[in-house]
Length: 109
Image 1 (tube, one colour):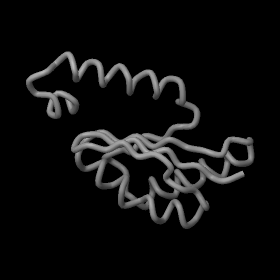
Image 2: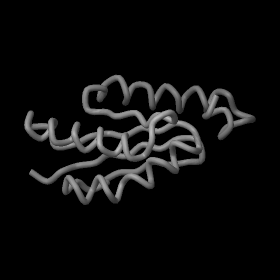
Image 3: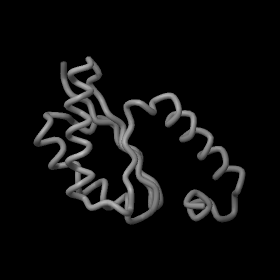
């Protein structure tokens, strides 16, 4: 539904974008965090920091963050500075539009 707002006159483009995002999510699921509209920025930020520290202990030096919906896009952007400050991670890739955001955080080895 969110992608149809971006491509209101092109359902095929919305479906194609969805399939691309879906494949990425499925392949990277263990190293992915989804931003929930029901949780506060503070709680999500703390959870992401904890997950990143756990990933590092397991030899994984990245985490993907996905947010769907305008509110979650804004929430994700607002969390990044604190996450980067506490983990040393850098947002090396950001894909963003009104209804969706994808952020790839990497921590140097």
